[in-house]
Image (cartoon, rainbow, N blue to C red; front, side, top):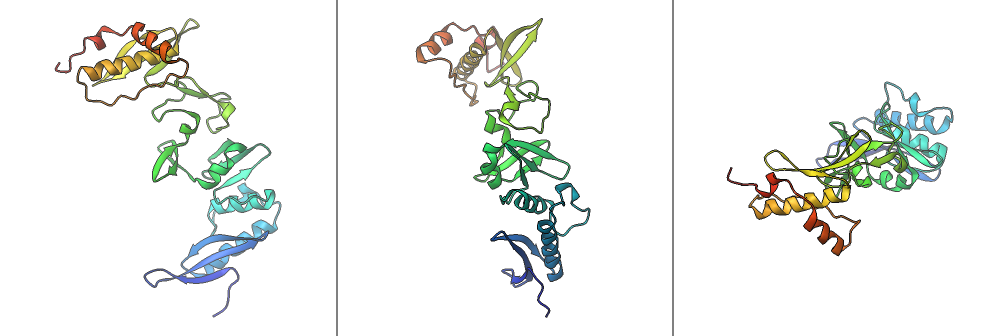
Length: 265
């Protein structure tokens, strides 16, 4: 049988043969994937060789028909241009990097996040972006302190209007506490606290985000004391020390619907 460059035969646990493809570049052995046919594995090697040998070949030159997956195409071009090999589809610039979900869907991150995303693959489902972390799907917004249920434009915003730009300076958190929402009327901000018990209950409107966060905690405690069997998330209010928190907790007003809530109704 003819020996094809970059092709290594192997067998699955059930004895089925398959072929691994790999290439060595800049003293690094790079896996190019596994294939059913030897010719496919060799074609993957040939495509990889063309990428690393053609400095003018760019990410958007990825062909409509290719043996190599797009992610590997990006990884090889980044390694060729920047000398950094990442298993994930990353292309490094001066102080940020691009992460390619697809050829048409590209995200931008600070270079400080390079190590993390070189080890974590981003998945997109239902418009949400996740990575696998200890067997769970973790929303990438959690790295910015943004809750899973947060809504863009209400709880956070992209400063430059580009929702693919995840650099830290481009993400502004508007509402950082559970059950707290900022409203604006005639240039005046108010913070509304609400809690969900068989529907949304307005706890009250407050002049500061801190008061609203404490009001939410107080409402959650009241509802639990009244027998509501729900584990409400608690807000950790970093702005207040223990004495200040206790004082605000005692003084902050709560709506009558919460104070006189009847679980039997």
